[in-house]
Image (cartoon, rainbow, N blue to C red; front, side, top):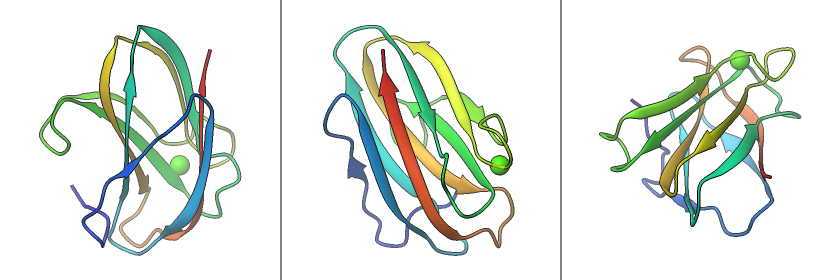
Length: 112
Ligand SMILES: [Ca+2]
Protein backbone atom coordinates (compact mmCIF):
# COMPACT_ATOMS: atom_id res chain seq x y z
CA UNK A 1 0.00 0.00 0.00
CA UNK A 2 1.37 3.33 -1.05
CA UNK A 3 -0.03 6.68 -0.06
CA UNK A 4 0.02 10.02 -1.74
CA UNK A 5 3.12 11.95 -0.98
CA UNK A 6 1.36 14.69 0.94
CA UNK A 7 -0.39 12.23 3.20
CA UNK A 8 -3.62 13.93 2.25
CA UNK A 9 -6.89 12.41 1.21
CA UNK A 10 -8.88 14.43 -1.29
CA UNK A 11 -12.63 14.63 -0.94
CA UNK A 12 -14.95 13.93 -3.82
CA UNK A 13 -17.54 16.66 -3.68
CA UNK A 14 -20.47 16.49 -6.02
CA UNK A 15 -22.41 13.86 -7.89
CA UNK A 16 -20.37 13.87 -11.10
CA UNK A 17 -16.71 14.63 -10.76
CA UNK A 18 -13.69 14.80 -12.99
CA UNK A 19 -10.45 15.50 -11.20
CA UNK A 20 -6.93 15.58 -12.52
CA UNK A 21 -3.49 15.56 -11.03
CA UNK A 22 -0.08 14.01 -11.15
CA UNK A 23 0.88 10.70 -9.59
CA UNK A 24 4.52 10.58 -8.60
CA UNK A 25 6.52 7.39 -8.72
CA UNK A 26 5.88 5.14 -5.69
CA UNK A 27 2.77 6.99 -4.53
CA UNK A 28 -0.96 6.62 -4.84
CA UNK A 29 -3.52 9.36 -4.79
CA UNK A 30 -6.50 8.78 -2.52
CA UNK A 31 -9.98 10.27 -2.82
CA UNK A 32 -12.82 9.78 -0.40
CA UNK A 33 -16.51 10.05 -1.19
CA UNK A 34 -19.74 9.24 0.57
CA UNK A 35 -22.81 7.73 -1.01
CA UNK A 36 -26.00 8.73 0.84
CA UNK A 37 -27.95 5.88 -0.72
CA UNK A 38 -27.24 2.65 -2.58
CA UNK A 39 -26.34 3.52 -6.16
CA UNK A 40 -24.46 2.39 -9.22
CA UNK A 41 -21.30 4.32 -9.95
CA UNK A 42 -18.81 4.23 -12.76
CA UNK A 43 -15.28 5.24 -11.84
CA UNK A 44 -12.67 5.47 -14.58
CA UNK A 45 -9.31 6.92 -15.48
CA UNK A 46 -9.94 7.59 -19.17
CA UNK A 47 -7.54 10.23 -20.43
CA UNK A 48 -4.73 9.41 -18.05
CA UNK A 49 -1.20 9.40 -19.44
CA UNK A 50 0.03 6.18 -17.86
CA UNK A 51 -1.00 2.64 -16.97
CA UNK A 52 -3.39 3.18 -14.07
CA UNK A 53 -4.92 0.77 -11.57
CA UNK A 54 -8.00 1.68 -9.51
CA UNK A 55 -8.91 0.31 -6.11
CA UNK A 56 -11.95 1.06 -4.00
CA UNK A 57 -11.93 0.40 -0.27
CA UNK A 58 -14.66 0.88 2.27
CA UNK A 59 -14.41 1.85 5.89
CA UNK A 60 -11.00 2.80 7.20
CA UNK A 61 -8.79 4.25 4.51
CA UNK A 62 -5.88 1.84 4.35
CA UNK A 63 -7.21 -1.06 6.41
CA UNK A 64 -10.78 -1.30 5.14
CA UNK A 65 -11.80 -4.13 2.87
CA UNK A 66 -11.12 -3.79 -0.81
CA UNK A 67 -14.47 -3.78 -2.57
CA UNK A 68 -13.37 -3.32 -6.17
CA UNK A 69 -10.21 -3.25 -8.24
CA UNK A 70 -9.45 -2.82 -11.93
CA UNK A 71 -6.37 -2.53 -14.09
CA UNK A 72 -7.23 -2.25 -17.79
CA UNK A 73 -11.03 -2.43 -17.91
CA UNK A 74 -11.40 1.09 -19.21
CA UNK A 75 -9.85 0.45 -22.61
CA UNK A 76 -6.15 0.46 -23.38
CA UNK A 77 -4.36 0.65 -20.07
CA UNK A 78 -6.94 2.83 -18.35
CA UNK A 79 -9.09 1.48 -15.53
CA UNK A 80 -12.83 1.32 -15.05
CA UNK A 81 -15.00 0.10 -12.19
CA UNK A 82 -18.76 0.01 -12.59
CA UNK A 83 -20.80 -1.49 -9.82
CA UNK A 84 -23.53 -0.89 -7.31
CA UNK A 85 -22.29 0.31 -3.95
CA UNK A 86 -24.20 0.32 -0.71
CA UNK A 87 -24.55 3.66 1.08
CA UNK A 88 -21.38 4.54 2.90
CA UNK A 89 -17.94 6.03 2.65
CA UNK A 90 -15.50 4.78 0.05
CA UNK A 91 -11.85 5.47 -0.66
CA UNK A 92 -10.74 5.50 -4.28
CA UNK A 93 -7.07 4.83 -4.90
CA UNK A 94 -5.46 5.87 -8.16
CA UNK A 95 -2.43 3.64 -8.48
CA UNK A 96 -0.06 2.62 -11.25
CA UNK A 97 0.41 -0.82 -12.70
CA UNK A 98 4.13 -0.87 -11.99
CA UNK A 99 6.05 0.62 -9.11
CA UNK A 100 7.56 3.13 -11.54
CA UNK A 101 4.21 4.14 -13.02
CA UNK A 102 3.61 7.84 -12.81
CA UNK A 103 2.12 10.61 -14.84
CA UNK A 104 -0.96 12.68 -15.26
CA UNK A 105 -4.19 11.05 -14.19
CA UNK A 106 -7.81 11.84 -14.88
CA UNK A 107 -10.37 10.40 -12.47
CA UNK A 108 -14.00 10.39 -13.53
CA UNK A 109 -16.85 9.51 -11.16
CA UNK A 110 -20.29 9.03 -12.66
CA UNK A 111 -23.14 7.97 -10.39
CA UNK A 112 -26.38 6.99 -12.11
CA1 LIG B 1 -4.00 -0.37 -16.24
